[in-house]
Image (cartoon, rainbow, N blue to C red; front, side, top):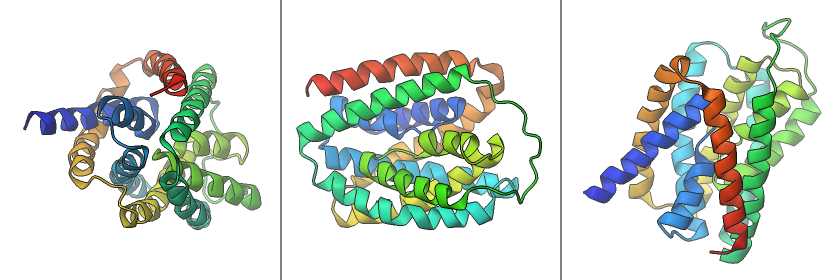
Length: 252
């Protein structure tokens, strides 16, 4: 009972923090699963991705109601993530523990740098938030293949890579990029979760308990976001991720 409560609170915290800074919580969950709960890399990735899926579906429903999803890009990019999502699940399944720790450590350090750079960048208002608009479809498709692969390999949401690329390289307005990326993640995570489930990589009970907490946490984060300095939280998270990444690279 105590463990169930702690897992729910973990999901609540991850959902709230992720919403406050505008990213998924997978890159927080996987280190916790590995270092605190001592899951295997395969179980850590598969279980985390299942939780990411619950969050992504919940957020996507809200964005669809707000009419912020650009379907021309969302459907195109979603299809592009599928090969990467399936390939990523098999890549994760065949990682050795040491290889995964080093790879994920490097990935965490990269994310910490990306988050830091985003915290220094104040997005300018878009000249036009109208849909449709023109964008580089080939580049967007190639980026989406990579996002699907990374999401399924490491059990994380791909928004940390996808959203800045859609804004900076493809010219998407910020809120359209966020909503469209959420839609893409929901589709990509769905197929990644199926692959991980067939490979036996998902611990169902922890995924459901933490996922339930994350859904409530996301709502909590959305509520307190206007009253909170998300910039400070983002910078603290950058430091924590950098230290975690170094810790994972040093050894189990």
